[in-house]
Image (cartoon, rainbow, N blue to C red; front, side, top):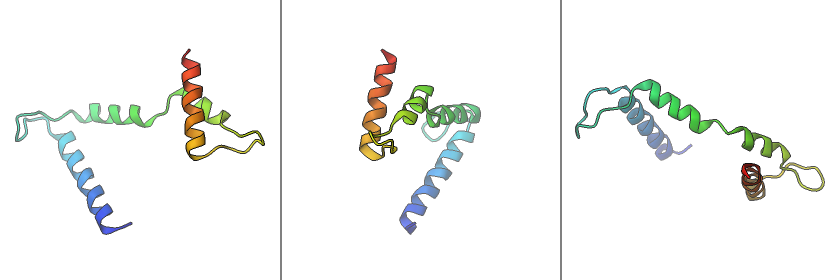
Length: 85
């Protein structure tokens, strides 16, 4: 990993942690979110829906090989849209 990438990631982690733990108004008078709300929002965003998981399992080509890249993304997107109705 390049030094720039590491520096950016470290900065994001520090900024996110400092904001998440802050419950008093900051420099702009904006209160930070409580830690449990930040954790809950992050967990929900990182967890795929059951429809996506089911569609990823079905993403195979005609020879039975798993799809990858743009083909998999397109298949899962169409599969989820079809599942919703």
